[in-house]
Amino acid sequence: MTIEEGVVFGNGGGRELACGVFTPPGGARNAPSVLIIHGGGWREGDRSQLRAYGLRLGRAGYVCVATKYHLTPEAPWPAQIEDVKAAIRWMRAKSGELGLDPDRIAVKGNSAGAHLALLAAGTAGLAEFEGEGGNPGVSTAVAAAIAIYAPTDFSAGVGGGRVLVGDAGEEAARLASPVTHIDSSFPPTLLIHGNGDETVEPDQSMLMSRALDELQVPVELHMYAGQPHAFDAEPVFARQCADVMSLFLARYVPSAVTA
Image (cartoon, rainbow, N blue to C red; front, top):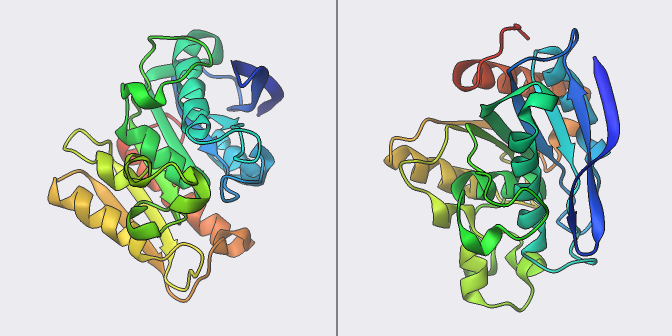
């Protein structure tokens, strides 16, 4: 597999935004792809955190892009989702060069990155979050979403909303909540959580799952008994989560290669 680091995909806040690109063994031609978004409470972290998932999914035939986004100490909300959408636009605009199918782009994230993945999945075309960053007018629609211990609802001050939107107000918190943007066009979604999570309550994934299911959107919820936040840092759980993701993607964003 080929890994290219520091690939510039756009500009935001006066500086370049870069990503890492994982190309499957033998190269890629019209392949499905996954945008990987790191966690860290929107305040810290970097794209290297989820390198193992990029390697695993890359070997399964997916072009993986591990993206950077502005952290809140550097840029206030909504810079984070604007950067994620800039990465999706770049992937679609450069699909020929990257060897990916522009209609088979999935998004995947952990924690804060999972929140951004779900929000991107539900807000394609929403002007408030398009921002700048390059390739204006290119669609940010995605074919599927994967969210591992995701904050989904910032109402009543829960789910980390105050950390993200600060004092921007209740309407900003509502618009930043993925559950606000659910409708029947939402893409197939995989949710993974541990019911021992004290950082992001497991109810956040359960709420998202119920809301999607009520609209008959394909959704899977995998709840791991007793597991805390970031439980997939343990290799045994990371491997199992990767297997679950591979099976989900094979159903909704299929690759020609079996994981």
